[in-house]
Figure (cartoon, rainbow, N blue to C red):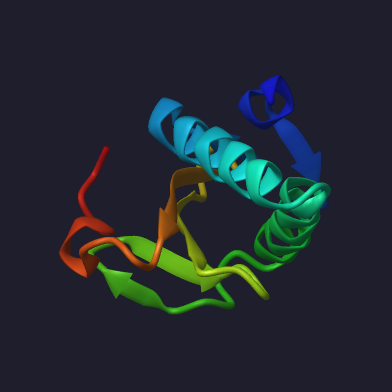
Length: 110
C-alpha cells in the first residue's frame, strides 16, 4: 500500500494522501480482499480512475463544505474527500470515506 503515500503526477496536478486517508485506504482494501479475492484490487483500480479524473480536472466536482470536494468511487460505497491547492498544483486526499459512517464526520479536517 505504500504506493498511495508517494506523490503521483497525473496531468497538471499531483495528489497526495494524508496519513489518515492512507490508513482508510489500507483498511478498505484489506476488508474487501478478505471478503472476496481480487475485490481489493478492483477497489484500487476504481480509486485510481477517480484520482486520474480529479487530477485532470480538480474543479469538476463542486465544493461540498468549506474547501472540501467529494467524488464517489464507482461500484463501492466510498467517497474521496479532497482539497485543491492551486499554489502547489496538488490534490490533497483527506479521506477515503466509507458512506456507511456518520456523514457529519466526512468533512472533519484530519
